[in-house]
Amino acid sequence: MDNLKAIVESLLFVSDTSLTIDKIKTVLEIEDRKAIHNVLTTLAEEYESQKRGFFLAEVAGGYQLRTRPEYGQWIRRLKQTRPARLSRAALETLAVIAYKQPVLRSDIEHLRGVDCGGILRMLLERRLIRVLGRKDLPGRPIIYGTTKRFLELFDLKDLGDLPTPKDLQALGEAWPNDST
Amino acid sequence: MFSGLFGLGQAMVEQIQDQTPYYVHLGDLFDGPMDLLVHLVKKNELDIYDIPIALITKQYLEYLKLMKALNIDIAGEFLLMAATLVHIKSRMLLPTQDEPEGEEDDPRMEIVRPLAEYLQLKYAAEDLVKRNQLDWDVFVREHCDDDTEFVDEGSENLVQVSLFELIDAFQEIIKQVSPEHFLNITVDTISVKSRISQIADILEQRGSVTFQKLFETQATKGDIIVTFLAILEMARSQVIRIMQHVSSGIIRIFHG
Image (cartoon, rainbow over all chains, first blue to last red; front, top):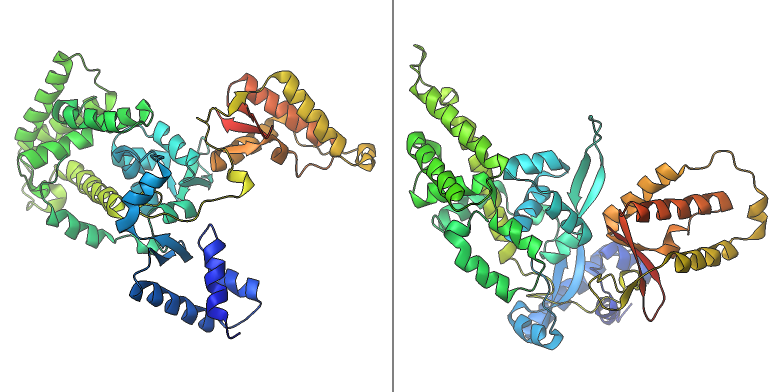
C-alpha cells in the first residue's frame, strides 16, 4: 500500500478510542506490523515538526490523536463544560488500586486509613475502576482493578508506564514540604 | 471536616470554584488519621524513620482535643490511631531485654511502615494530577457510540419511569421474541436472585445499562420474565434507578 500513511492517519482521525496496531492490521488486512509501526512513527514526527495543534499519543496500548496540552485552556473555553475533576481522596484511592491491583477494598482502606466505600462507587460509576472478581474469602469480597479508561484519562501507555516506587521516592525528596 | 483545621480556606475556595457534588469534598476534607500524622511529621520536619513518638503522640492527642472542642465528630479511625500511638509510646518506655537493638525491635515500626507506604501513595496521587489529563489538558474527538449516549445522569433530559411505562417496554421486548421459543420447556432456568446479582455486576462495571440491553441475551420467555422481575425487585429495594430519555425514549437503568 503506497498510501498506507494517509490511510492510517484517516483511521486515527475518526477513531474515538486509542487504536492498537493489531486493530489497524485487522482493518487493513495486512500482516506487516513493522510497516504500520513505521508510518505511526513518521506521522508522530510530522505532527511534531509541523507544530500541529494535535499530536499522536501512545495511550492505553494504542495510538490516539490528542490536542496539545498547551492549548487545553482554549478547548475548555470552546466546550464550556467543566469536567468534575477528581478529589485528592479519589486520586489516592485510584493510585492504590493502580499500584496494588488486583486489590480488595479492605486493603485499600487499610492503606488509606479511612472508609473508601463512597469513593469506590464513584470511581466505578466513572468507569475508572472495575470489578475483577470476588475473592474466595468469607463474605466473598470484591476484587478491584483499573480500566482502560483510567489509562486514557491519565495519558498512560500501560500500567508499566506508572512511576516505580523508586521514582516516587525521588519525587518525594524533590518536594519535602509540599502543601498538605 | 478534619483538615478544616489547617486547610479550610483552600477547601472552601475549591468548593466555590468547583461545582462537583458536595460528598466528594467531604472525602477531601476528612482524610483520616494517616493524613493528620503526615501533617504533623511535615510540620515538625521529622524523618519518618526516626519519629519522636512522645512528641507526635502529644500533638496528635492535642488535635483530637481541639476537634472535640470544635464539636467535630471524631471518627473511630482517629481513636484507633490514638490508641496505637499511646501503645507504641508505652512500649518505648519499657526497658528492652539484653538483645541488641535491631530495627525490627523498634516498636515505632508499627506506625513507620504504614506511614511510609501512605506517603508513597500520596506521591503517586500527586503524580497522577501532574499528568496530562484527558478532557482537561488534552482532548480527543467526541465520543459518539450510542451506548455511552446520555449516561450523564444529572441531565435534565432524563425523567423517572413509571411502572406502566416499564410494562409497555417489557411488552415490546416480549413481542420481539420469536414464537418458537415460547414452546420450549426449560427446567434449568435462572432464579430471580441470581439474575439480580448478574445485573448488579453489570451495573458495577458500567454504571448504567439500557433496559433493552438486559434482555438481549435471553432466548426464552421464562428468562425474560425472570429478568423483568429482577429489575422490579431491584427498583423496589432502591438498588437501581430507572430513567427515560425525553427525546429518544430509551430507558436506562442506573446504579442506586
